[in-house]
Amino acid sequence: MTDSMFEISGDTAIVTGSSTGIGRAIVERFTATGVDVVVSSRDQERVDAVASAINDSNRPGKALPIECDIRDWEAIETLAEATETELGQIDILVNNAGASFEAPFEELSQNAWKTIVDINLNGTFNFSRIVGEKMIENDGGHIINVSSVAARDGAPMMTHYAAAKSGLNSLTRTLGYEWAKYDINLNGIMPGLVATEGLESQRGISASDIDTDTVNRQIGLPEEIASVAQFLTSPAANYIQGETIVVEGVPRIPHTEHHDVE
Image (cartoon, rainbow, N blue to C red; front, side):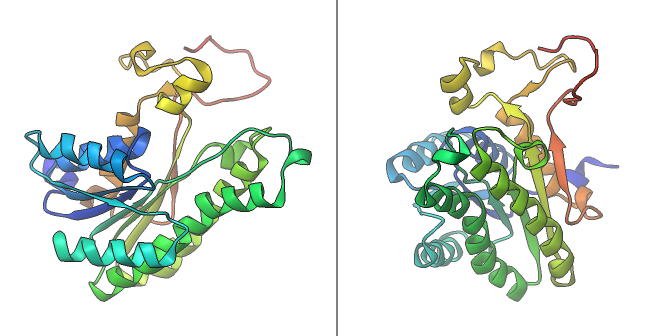
């Protein structure tokens, strides 16, 4: 297999929820490999800062900051049109935006449940419908849905989040089947614990605490998720369809004795 199998330069991508964490790492990776990227979140100032840092660097790809709420159909349509106008045909969509908070199920209000499902599942539907229609017209593309191991394992105190992400995995598999005929390569990534700003605020764990030279760990870096995103949007992944790839380090196998992990 040659390096050209992993080549994605010259493409145009949209990455939702890309002002911080995994989304930002994917944007930085894509632009470093020559992909032009729309940086998107609900906060214009934050996406402006990310795009400016990228455009002031020596990365061959450029960044276009666009504020967008993934729950707002018209805002997504506007973003898609602006992408085509400024950067050209959309080749890649990464549905990364997500949100959650901890609460026991009996304390979840209808609004709380709806909000988390809207962001983590319905937002992906919205973007996939709007951008996917353009990909169908343009004879194909790549879509990546960023899920969570909470979809597989459950997540006490975050039932709303786990349920939404589980639905996202099913969407990935089913739509991967339906849209293969349009030459749309559609897969997901299911990260375990990743050293993002959120993890640092919740658990006090930062990227500087992670030794990436060891296999024996259960916490990864956003850049390691970005590597999988690059792979899934490259020709090397053409025979992978409708799958959600788990990226979590040492498997979390309960009720067994095994060596300690970091």
